[in-house]
Every structure is written in C-alpha cells, then in structure tokens.
Length: 532
Image (cartoon, rainbow, N blue to C red; front, side, top):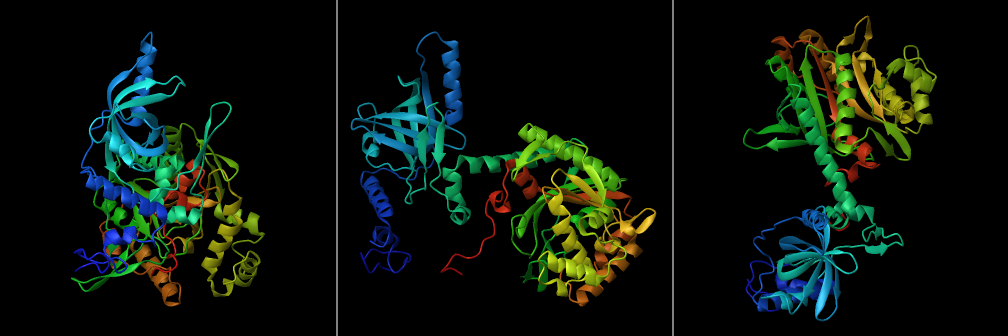
C-alpha cells in the first residue's frame, strides 16, 4: 500500500495517509508537528530516538542523597564522580553555549548542566532537539552550584525516548522562604482520568497515592502471612456467580458453548477451601459488579477477602480493627487521617452498635413494626424516586445507607442485620430473626462486610431458594441456587468467620481522596464524544 500524500510504501493508512504524513499534517497541533520534525532530524543525524537500555548507577533521589552524604563527610567542596542517571526533562533553560535543565523520575528531581564544549558524541546536536517530557540519560559528576542547587555536570547526554505529544506540565513558583509550589497544568478532572498516563507523569502527588496503595496491599499480605493465612487465587470467570447481592457482567465461553460470569465476590470459592482443610485463606483480587458509578463505586474494584476456621463474627471484628489499625500505622505512620474535612481515627477498638437500634434512631421507625408503606414514604422523602419499585429488603437497605451510614465518621461495627438481608450468614444466637453479621462503616461508607459463615447445608439451600424466588419476582441482584456450593457444605464447613474489605475505599480514606476514581489507576468512564 502506498501513501496517497507522499507515495511511500506503508502497511496501513492513518486517516487516509501514512503515519509520517499524519504527524506532519497541518491538522495536527503545532507542538506535535514541531516534535515530529525534530524526530526526523534526529534520524537524519543517525541518532536512535528510542533507546534499548540505559545503565543507571543511581535513581535521582539516590544520587541526591549520595552527594549529600559525601558533603557531610568532607571538609571542602565535594563532587560525586561517575554518576549515571536518567529521567524526563521537566524544565529547560538554554543559555547558548550551555543549558540548565531539571529531570525527574518516579521519586526524585535533579538539575543537570549541559555544556556544548564538554559533551561528547551526539550531545551538542541533541541539545537543540530536546523538548520537555523527553527521556534522557546523563553521565557526569554531581556538585553544588554557587546558588546552592545539587546538579549533575553532564559529560555525556543520551536520548532515551523522544516525546511526540506534549505533557501538560504546570508552572512552578519559588516562594520567599524557598518552598517550591507547582501549579498544575492538568486541572480537568475527567481528562486526568482518561489520560492517566499523563496525569501520573506530571503530578507527583498522584504517583504518591498509588505508591501508598501498593504499600497497603503489601502490608496486608505481610500481616496475614505472619498469622498463618494462605494467599490463594480463585476463579474470576465463573459458571455461576455468588457471594453478594449484585448484578454480574456476563460473557460467553465459545469452546464450552456456555454462558459465564465475571465474579462479584470471592466468598463461595474461598469457603470451599476451608471445607478442604485450608483453614486460613485470603485473596486480594478484582471483583466486578454491573452497577452504577459514583464516588465510592466503580464496576471493577479490589477486595481483600479472608476466612478462618473456628471463628465467629466477633473474632472477625477483633481481627478487623487490629489489622486495619496496624497496617495504617505501618504504611502511613499514623491511624489518624483527614477525610473530606473531618478527622478520622482508625485506632482499635472501634465502636459497636446494633443494626435495629441504629435504624430506629435514624428513622424514628421500629424495624419490627414498620409497614412497607411507611418505609416507602420515608424513602421518597430522602430522594428515592424509584421507591415504589423496591422490595422491603431493598427499602431497608436504602434507608440504612442514606440515614445511618452517612452519619458515621469514625469506624463503627454495625451488627445484627435482619436475617433476610444476609443469606450467607448464620442466625444470631438467641435472636434468629437477626444475622451474625457486621458492616464496618467509616466516613459514611461501608468498608468491611463480615459474617459468622452459614455452614448448615440445609439452611443454606433454603436461603438460596428464598433468594431464587426474589429473583423470579424481579430482583436482579438476588442470588441463584448454587448446588455445587451446597454440595461443598455437605462435606462439612467448620465454624468459620470471614470478611470482605474494600481496598479502594481504604486507600481513599488514608490518602484523603473523596472519589474512588482517584485511587483506581484506570477507572471506568463514559465513552468520549465521537467514540464508541
């Protein structure tokens, strides 16, 4: 195939022309055209604009720290020789025969000094063809300038990757007391979510959130591993979904000619493992629910689920408050956080309140005597326009969420849910109308859901059957009968406590982010205009 514009042979056309003509077209913004012209010039000079490797001696933070240690140990002017560092160009000031630039990597930032008469090889030519955002590597000595800034005096300059699209760098301001303030050049929130690559590249605070997230999951693993829990992996693609009340995503397995579902929870497979004598198990994995998107819900989310034998929900309460406070202290150095203008303390022990008492206090209605009409009228008052279509259980759940959870700041265990709302939990001892279940509520949202796990196969089958009737009556979130899971229970599930903890929501709390999209690297978004 030949390009109709330049006649060059091409494997395919991009908007009707070869990819080189596409970049050079007047339809592209001028910064992209200019960068493409520099790319072409580099290739004319025999410079590979996309390197294969670069052998660093230090990252930027390490180079800075190593130089400061050398300074502290010496008596006079110090230089750290033979340093090889790499990063993106964040700023560039051309002085003619020389230039000062700042480069940045994952954690650090360092000034480099480029002199045409000192650089060897392709270095001097490169100085005229660099742009902000380009990846470069330099080798030289680290010293402190007369103005006091730690700097690499570059003796060689290597282009590692030429950027063709400008990054939205912000402007910097140095205050009178020497503080560096960065004014973001990427303030459009929706654009930041859609272009997370650029968001991470220009916003150190965004990178910090996701480093905290990574350290958090590692800390959970270490905490659980040290207590004899075994990390396992269970199926994401399932023939029958279960373990929660939610709508699934479905797909089709062509080889088996079978409808399959993305899991909505890990629970039923993890409890099968308890039956199989793996008596302490956990999984940190993605679940998928075909539900709405709001500040605390994303259709794809991360859960920590754990189950341990010979325990009940009170044991799980103690484990939850201890583990979360221990992990928060390890990762963040504190258990106190500011979230949405309110200070939150995760220090154990957490508060406890019965579900029916919290419901009565918030609504003025008694759970056991309130009629459906009263519940529906109150739901309309709190803004649920669809209240006429909700079942009694859905009304209770809606009212509890809107009127009870929103009032809670510091973590509270709300326990003893109506048994009908908890088809996988054991009845509460002495009060069989309630379930041995709790939810840990913090900052107005559910962080943890936990049970004394139902281990009676006959009771479980009947609960599934009741759910199936709700489903047939139109409740698309109700469960189906899972005969294979009941069969597993028939082999004997010992007394077991278990929980699911929302990793995304805990990261929100610990980093002060009020939208789940700010703690998910690639959140679910509506299609951009003009795309499908």
